[in-house]
Length: 228
Image 1 (spheres, rainbow, N blue to C red):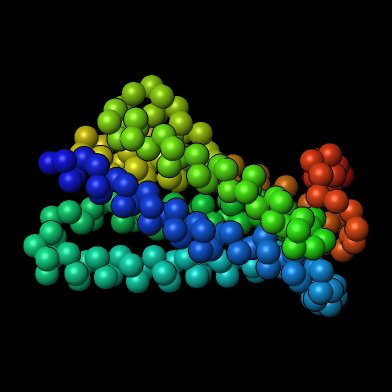
Image 2 (image 1 turned 90 degrees about the horizontal axis):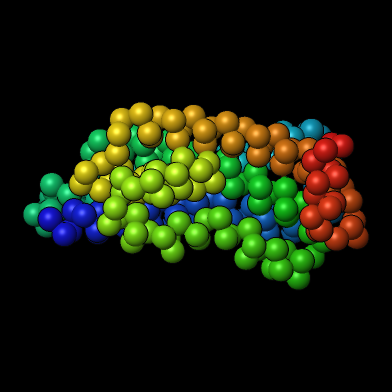
């Protein structure tokens, strides 16, 4: 039906996007505030910078998983009461939670690294929107992908690691689904890309969290990522 074809994929994508905003986006401002208030310097005296960053990422994942579990539970209980129980995509729920974990680690590491380079609120605000662009782009191409989820464009975009969680989730929720191998290939690619971002983010975080007055410029990020 039209509800299956459009509404279910959109809801799944928007719920995943909400979890990403809830778990990953606060990392940037939280790290910036801890750096500007010199709280990070005290914490770094007790733990390694990478452990500090990983603790924040695990916290973001925990928040998102708790919220996702609540929303899913409400849907499981509420939709049958409204006579819409057949719209619950039971086979996609494990994929949904896997994408939540991957996306929070992926974008959370990036945003924590960016936040560690910011010295005040103005710098954090100036860098927030560019950091959100990879998360927002899938929403602008949602309808063409829903209309033709098996096209070459849809397949290529869903296998591009930064977009994999949102786009692949949306494609899997369409009535036709996707070939069985594509979600697994996309998942492996997203995991490898996430590990790379966590590694790079950790190197940037380790250097930038203790620097004061250095502006968050691209050349600085590249230098910190390369030199560590």
